[in-house]
Every structure is written in C-alpha cells, then in structure tokens.
Length: 345
Ligand SMILES: [Zn+2]
Image (cartoon, rainbow, N blue to C red; front, side):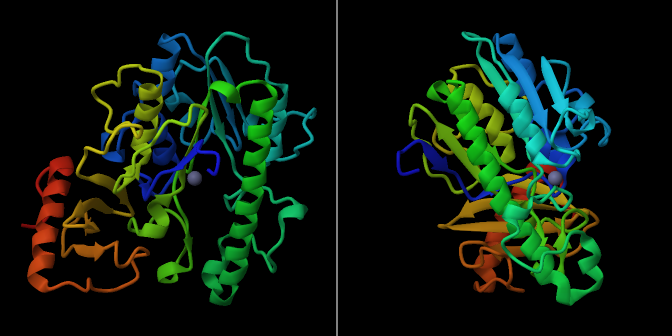
C-alpha cells in the first residue's frame, strides 16, 4: 500500500453468507437471486480473449454442491483438495500448503496471458492450522462452541490464528508469482466468499443467519502492478471483481453482469445481499451509508445507519422518525428494483 500498488476497497460486501453463492458471485458477477448454473463468467470471457485459465483450490470443490461443474468448462488446469495424492506434504484437503505446492510447480507458458484463481482455507473453521500460527490460545476448532458460550473466545482465537496463517500464505503466493515473473504485469484481487459471526448477536459461524454486517462484510484488496487509481466509493460488492478485471485489460463487460468496474468512478445506487431467509440492500443516502433488511416472508424491516453503527449493533437507528422513514422508503425502492414488489407497502 505504501508503494501505491495496493488499493483497499470498501466497505465491500458478499452477496450471501455461504461459500457456493459467494464464490460464484466473484466469478460471474451475479447476485444470488440472479445466479444460474450455466453462467457466462470471467473464465469464459478470458478464455475467449486468449487467456489460459488455472484454478488451484483448497478443499473439495468437485463434490461441494457441484461447484466444479458450476465453474464452467473454460478451465484449462484444475486442481482442488479432492485431488491430493501421496506426493503432497499436505495430508488433508483443507491444508493450504497443498495450494502452495501446486503453485510452486506451476509453469505458465511465457507470452501467454494467465488467469489464476486460488481458493484458501486457512481462515475457514475446517482449514488446517499449522502450529507456528497458533498464536492465540486457547483455540477451539468447530461449532461445538455454539452450545458452550464460554468457549466463544476459543472459537475467535482459532479464527484469528487462521487469519494470521492466511496472511502468510498470501505473502508466499505473492513471492511465488514474483519469482515466476508474473507480478510485473498483474492485477491481483484478494477477497473472501463471505464473513463470519464471532459472537456478535450471540452467534458464531456463517449461513442461516440474516445478512448482518459481520456475515457479509469482506476484505477487498487489489494489487495493481501499474499503480492504477481505484476511486473511493461508498460501497462495493463481490459482483464488481469480474468487471474490474475485464475493464483493466480493456475488454468489454458482458451486459448481463451485475457489478461495476472498481477502477472507474462509482455509478450504482444499491448493493444487495441475502441469507437466512432475509435480504438486504445497502446504499448511500444523504451523506450516510444505510442498510435495510427484511425477511422474504414479510414483516417489519430493519433500518441501520452504518456510518454511525458500522457493526450493526444498535437496536434502533438514532434518527428522527420522519427522516428514517424517508431513508427506509428509498432503500425499499432499491430492494423492489432487484426483487420485485417489496413484501410490505
Ligand atoms: Zn466459505
């Protein structure tokens, strides 16, 4: 960042709170309510533009809800955790050291543009934690903490150890890309498929919860070897990743894509997310960033001023009722734009 080559974009949102929809949103630039299993996504476009497409994925994406199939047929080289064999030092499909091994052995052909997609498991509950990253103790793996509130600290420690490990794995990936001469002309996006509850609202883990901020706020960092400016914006989404990469190489963005290029000024008014039977919209209104969440089944929605309450902790917005009603109407109109008529008038 000090060198002007890494932009931190945010606040950035996942489209949902689960891996399947989050991963597809990054590659296909579709919100979850727009997703199909045969999307025309980033791999298809880049393949047509002459790129070689390689996927190196921690954990088994082949059998996880058919993700591999949903990734499409444009992938030239594919590896995931289900394909580990005895030659790997990593003994488990959720060990990111396997991804580092694949990357170290990867020999991209000189002169051919490359699209490389990497999935890491270090932060995930199931991800292998190596001893040198177990800085915070006690650390507890698994969701058993759900039934033992006093062990939330151990769950959070495990998460933090995973973040520390992911940081190191990402550093090593950059080192490998540099060694292969690929970083001199590259755009690298670092992001996540979803967030995680770490005791907020009394919850841990992800999925099956309404899309609260800790669940849908994700990191979004862009390393750009040309030091291109990524303008500040009120909010961003996973759906922006694919259009940004195409815009950076001067390629046209498919019309059906939901995102906008992050190297251009912000134009959109709303971003969407859904999870646990609720959907939400985030939008800047009158100098603040607001979020409106409602259950698909109807009932009263929930309005939060994220500028004042960025972790969505307060029960009620600290706004005059009339002003809040006007903002809520704007955001409900945004929801209706995406999902059709709002559940309540
Ligand atoms: Zn996930």
